[in-house]
Image 1: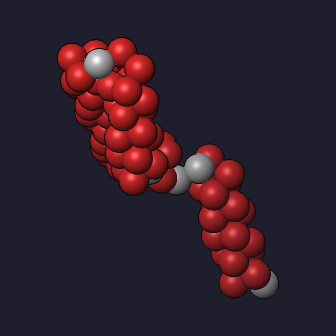
Image 2: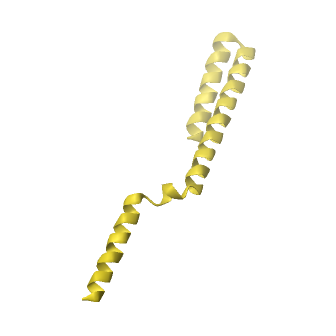
Image 3: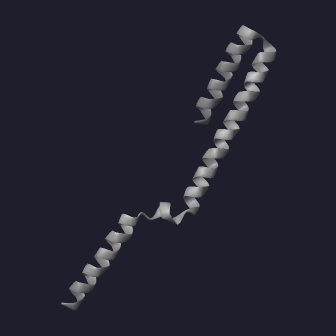
Length: 79
């Protein structure tokens, strides 16, 4: 993802510089850098929230299956 963003930024900046001048290219580069940092920050926050949220780690169906297996094992042990 970073390589794609970097390559896109370089190409876009070059095109804008060629068509509208160096100053416009610099502004475009700064804008794309800011957008890249914002996307990177949002992605990091998303990953952290997912890692810290136990509900995302253990799905309700997994808990239900484990409970059913434990109950089944207890019933078999009683027989």
